[in-house]
Image (tube, rainbow, N blue to C red; front, side):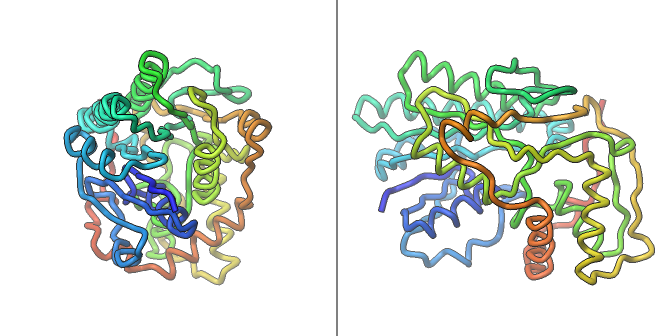
Length: 340
């Protein structure tokens, strides 16, 4: 059993990664600030012998230093981040504080811990959005960074910090750039869970502009497996794109989701209709990753077929209605990202 730290382990991807690592019998230390988007699933794993939650802000360098020094983890998965693009348009300062300053404080803690011969491997989780619009082809790991939103710019800044610490301070770190995730425990401000909940509650299905923006989708459990592969096999100092190759226009995704729900016998209410809404500022048209590097060099590949994963996600939300019990509807029903 190895000690593993997950920062942001109560978020969407973090929750799934924590569960994945617990099942693999590792001792998981979840460091999370427990903000509005944190999952309230703690009771499911609180009594696990190989799990510990520590409420802490990644910007608390002193406390982060002490925790890493105490547990001496084999690896740290850095998932602590603000991630909703629309929120970054309304409140960019929070994204700079968490995504850039938070990563900086983690890196500083690791830099000083090297002097005490504590050198955990860092897996820094980033996004395909740092590459910006990819109107043709697919962005590989050498594609230039061209972020369009405060969110993607903050993630790009964090990536550059990690790279600089690898080169200057010889930190043992790997960066992953992943496409859009979907699956259990996702906060309902994001597209797929928002559409699922609106379908189940007979509400309109709002889509930006005309729904022509294209995104690449991967099931969160495939992403978790990829991250664990990066821990085991990822080469120090390298970037790896984690993608599925499955691209869909937003309009086609929502239509596919409606089709899945109908096939499951879910009644589609009269008010559940697609509604085009005002686009957000700086909205990228298309993201698409070239994932050949991780496929060929690390022998990882996604396993969950998109339609199957989508159906399982709908089932999860049907069976876990309590997931939303402690979440204020104001947190995910109000339209954000309109500021100019």
